Amino acid sequence: MEVKNKKAYFDYTILKEIEAGISLVGSEIKSVRNGSIDLKDSYVVFKDNEAYALNIYIAKYEEANNFNHDERRSRKLLLHKKEINKLKEFREQEGISIIPLKAYFKNSNLKILIGICKGKKLFDKRESIKKRDLERELNNF
Image (cartoon, rainbow, N blue to C red; front, side, top):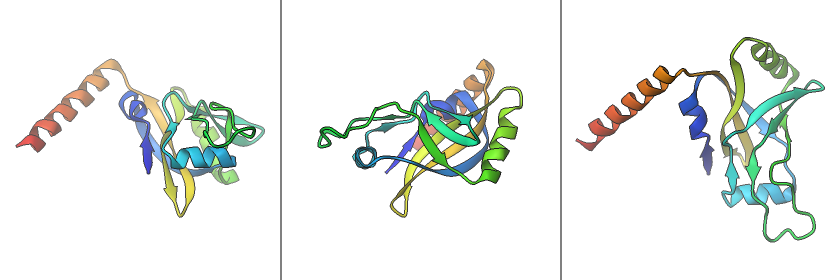
C-alpha cells in the first residue's frame, strides 16, 4: 500500500527527500492499513526541536468505539536530531516548504517520505502538463 500526495508533485519542485517514521495510535494504524489516509494539504512544522506533520487525514476506524482518534490531529515524525536540524536549515530559506509526499509500509512500519520543496510558477506547471501529455501519447503507440 502506497499513498502519494499528487498535488505536491504538481505544485512543487522536489529538491530533496527524507524518509521518516510517524507516531500513530492503534486505531490510526488499522485505518491506514485499510487505505484510509490522505496527504493532500499536509505540511511539516517544528516545535520544541521535534517535527510534526499537520493536516494528514486518517479516517476513523469503525471498529474502535470509545478509543477512536481525531482525524486531523498533529502527528509526531520520528527523525534523528541531525535530520531535524537539517530540515530546519532548509525551512529558513526563502520559498522552501516541507511537505509529506508519500506514505508506505516498510517492514510493517508506516513511513512518510518528506520532501523539501520549492513552489512552481504557473509556467512551470504548464510545462509539467505538456510533459505528462507527451508521455501519455507515446505510451499509447
